[in-house]
Length: 262
Image 1: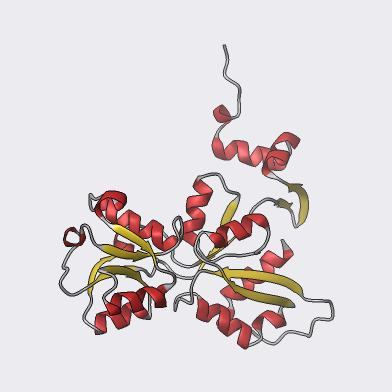
Image 2 (image 1 turned 180 degrees about the vertical axis):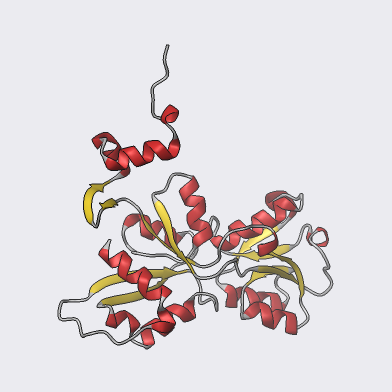
């Protein structure tokens, strides 16, 4: 939990960081995964690393590229401490994964669907190939949401291709290998300059924050009056029937916790 607090506090005050006394203990090792070098997330991590902000907080941060979907699995298995795929994490959370979004870096997801100039809308793309990313990952989830909300079927109406990261998808779009592709900045800006047509922007279809830091939530710490009074897993704390149990009961309502009467 101390490592989590340091990491989140550091990122939230990135541009306001001040000098702090040198740390004498061994630095905490932190692994952060990222699905692509997007302009909305990677520069923040890279800047913190190059400017020594992590080191000043006695953190040894390793930034590891992991494709969408795989990054969330790495958090669950303990191979990564943090991930930056917020939408994928929310999908996994709804399915029951013990994950939490602890900080968001921007208010919306920076992804849009761009097509060859001859296509003006999604209906004209029926039967065509569209560049996506790892199934179940952020890009794939957003693309499918756009298609479904427009009244089409991702499986029946389009050919969704796993084309790798944004640079690879943009290269395939530019070469004519794809009819359309999901892109993020700076490649989306290049696409507009090169005459490709923006078919849809994900911010018009989903109301979720963009890049966020996600972590495993298998341990809960309850603090009261400045000291730790309970800690453990969710089910363990409920069984203990202490302060956490009381707060949980108040939040969800007593009816959900009481057994049904015959």
